[in-house]
Length: 331
Image (cartoon, rainbow, N blue to C red; front, side, top):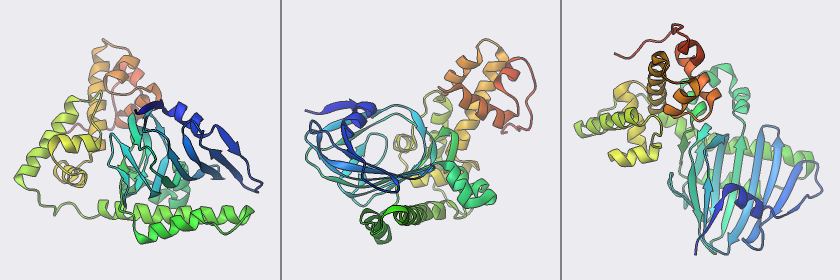
């Protein structure tokens, strides 16, 4: 029988016992509760903006772990054993890695199989760290703009795990140093792995799109995808769900949508949400909080920030009758 857990309950059981090894870096070994299974997760704070966990465990029962909508950091994960089956994403493991930008994560349920060993590494990075590494020009570039969302749904990618990636993971797991040198070594390896995982994603996204030849059937499906987004602003599908609904792969959906409509899926969704929000606010039949919920924002601050980026004024100013700035409606 499958054991259903909230993410908080799962985290508590995963860290029922812990060991703080003598080390010059912030490190904790969390032992899996005997009630849940066996194994460990080694958590290492490499800096205030970079966290690493190395794990190796298995569970006594099939698990289903429910995670609510939440703010999400930049993340990458590679499994060296086992797999994670998530209801909104492809299976991670079995040669498929996971790298995600920052932003808002939708709710999801992931499943872990009984007696299946799971091992690998998981990395979380503050988006500001990428800004420091890339510099102002790189941080603002179109290649990174969608990868680092702020107040909108995050984007996730699933690059194939290469031999070079596997090598870096093993070097992280079997780190040969201690103390400060260990921290420096792991920081360097995390950034090397980030480069390897993000490069194929950015390379794919920076290929020229104007010459992309779309079949009539694909164009029809892309128009269908746009219609779905327009009618489901409050609770839009994930990229995976949208692709399944219209019968397109994730890659074809992303590239085709941008080539056909000259905007990305995420940018289009945000624009339509803001247009709808402005209409509702100017009707003066709803409060700002009500309008935010009606267009899919559970967090008022994120809604206000997105609205201001779109129109140059705050939602409450729009409600009061102020005119919007620097926005040209699509024809």
